Length: 439
Image 1 (cartoon, rainbow, N blue to C red):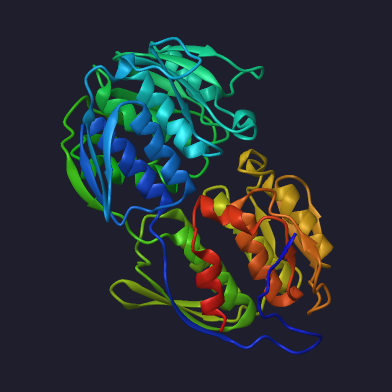
Image 2 (cartoon, helix red, strand yellow):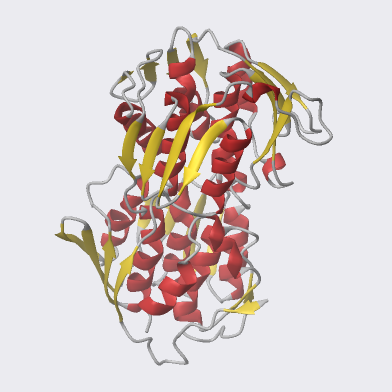
């Protein structure tokens, strides 16, 4: 266990208000999408690409699968090399390429469709946790499109899988996303490689809809023809049409949410850049959600958003479209007067950890009273001021839980966290930025 040596209230003494300016990392969601679309387009240049564990895993996987990649102040992808499908790895047949995605569910899901649509044989795998995360709806959809997919693991619908890639015919298909919109994005991102393009009909619940907006935006920026109905259930992506493009990645609202949590709990003002309230990133909803509790947000300059707190009353939020906000909002809710209610939590067990279970356990250790039924969490007792100083909490290898516990420490007092380094998955510089913001 390592201490979160951060200032926190002691007894009835309040933490000093936050007064800081924070330069945020770039969006992980947009970086990953830009990398895959550049690979589909046969080239591209990505400015302000996020450099973190997840994006590095995807870049390495694309390189292993044959795309040329140059990393400097920007990332430049070239066309896939001739004969890339014939390179082998140790312990495999000469024409099988293994790509390892760690615990990156996004990278693995995006690559499954991409690799199914290009020549070659690939084994897609990852950590034991990634091998537990669901892939079934996507794998079944790829098989209906003509892909050859062979399970290599013990659990049906999970990694590792062997893909025998080649051009897919495309055409019309239905998909029930169930647990993740990433299944939808994966198919849409690879659709320009399909001979007849893709006409995709979504049935049942569609989680995390704003991420589909990001997928559409990146495809269109590279020249793809994308059509959708008003409800986002009927999609059409034409074959071909992509061109190598230069794209700049905007700041990450998922990262911004933790600093919103800081001013919500401790009060004060934080200026976050580069950031826009008009962003299509779903996690910008943290502002409207916490405004209901007293947070204030405005665009003070074209690329700077200013947030002021504290939040003073309970709030409600349906997180079905924005599940990554759950850890930070759960921490904030536990610090406020009781009565906050978070819903739409049924898919959290499929994230990097079982986020609902881990967060409830951590916040309960800190004295919060929580009522949980698997789909909702309601606060029934406010976390006490400073009475949990030195308590041990767990990140469970989950970057967003680690950062959320920093927010909780602002009320609970300094905490002992098992794995602070896991923030490298999305925000390697988080602890340095956090400490500067709280000085």
